Length: 582
Ligand SMILES: Nc1ncnc2c1ncn2[C@@H]1O[C@H](COP(=O)(O)OP(=O)(O)OP(=O)(O)O)[C@@H](O)[C@H]1O
Ligand SMILES: [Mg+2]
Image (cartoon, rainbow, N blue to C red; front, side, top):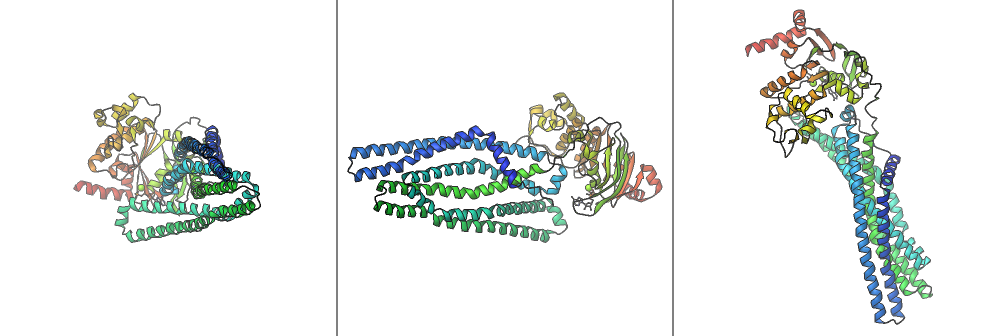
């Protein structure tokens, strides 16, 4: 499995710098407000120290009252300022997160389909849910908290220095153990959290594929094997989490034990200085109070540093999605003569596997109907994906109108070729939203006409016409209706080549019949390559290609192939016999 890339540290730093510089003003306001709040918070300990000194010197109750009132005023001002600062901080955070989500969606939608498929759904799912959310909290809560704590700490320690430089030095002397353990932790945390993220992705992947393939798992009696696989993954996640937990355990215990150190140092040195009359008692009291006050922001800073680490790791994974090279080399979009679909010597293997297509040669004329038949696993769906340009052949070429399909830019490719499978997703939104993906410029009239073409008679009963909301909690479409909506999208996109891969295979017979009628309306005037699971489709086609084991073994009209009495003829007789008996 090829995981999506992860951005390196430099890229993450650049992205962060960009984010901050885009919101320069907001960040500035947040910093100024927090700085002001922290400054107002510095006054009370100093005032308290002053009270101590004045009382020692025999001051009156009135002086003490005045100073106490000033303390109350400062506390109030500090509270108000930090409230506004937090508000501004969260506004900035929410904006930045919204931008990030939008960028993520744009990047994800721009990923080449083949890259997404190779990366597995778990990786992308984890990145779009867990990682984007982690980055969200980091930007919204963690970064502002760290900024506030840093500002407060700088001011508090600065204030101790102002009281007396030796007191300041004493306070700093309590810090080395905290700094050392933090560095130790940070060096290990980033990769440990990246590993945790990757293991979670693997687990999600394993569990979703097991759940999605539940029937297959049952049918092939793979239950034990899947359970074992799941257990392995769970164990790995557990190990990864235990590793990060071990880091946290050491880190936080050392830090907790180190908190009282600066206060203790200041009291020791303060006592000595006091005995020599170098500082006042008030100054020592104020310094001790400052350092007591510093414990809280220091604690916050360290707590959130670990959050920031997770955020950094998640951000690297989110940004990584943007590192996949874009789908197109757009090339020249000059209109090309003829739309002949030509396959020459196409070989293909799924990542790391052996070839499943061994040199396919095929030409399809504009307007032709080609049916492809063959046993399960012959490579029919794979061929369909190559024809639609979703995957590129390992060797050889698939071209339309003389240009390799994978060279067409995505918009142009959609206009030319569409692959129709059994999957029809109805997006949450209105009918119009669902149709305009295919043709952003389509008028309401064209949309209604497209729905009529595919026989979507349910449209007439919709309360709000094209504005009717679809999806969860709104109008739910049945399987046939969803198919018709998808087909109407196709009518609007108007590709001249359609590749049908068992588009109706999974539907119940009556739905399938309705869908086939709708499909027939869509096929008119287009080149059609149909992977056929019912031989009457092959019978009605202009030509039939038999694919076996990654090779085209027979190709020709139905009548010719029956006359040739080969594999197709055998298939036809056996199927026809069954059909007659019914
Ligand atoms: N995503 C994949 N990764 C690896 N191997 C794959 C993948 N998809 C298909 N294959 C393998 O490629 C071969 C051709 O598969 P393909 O799906 O093209 O067959 P098919 O003719 O469409 O079969 P069916 O009639 O069952 O749909 C098979 O051996 C299959 O196991
Ligand atoms: Mg198939």
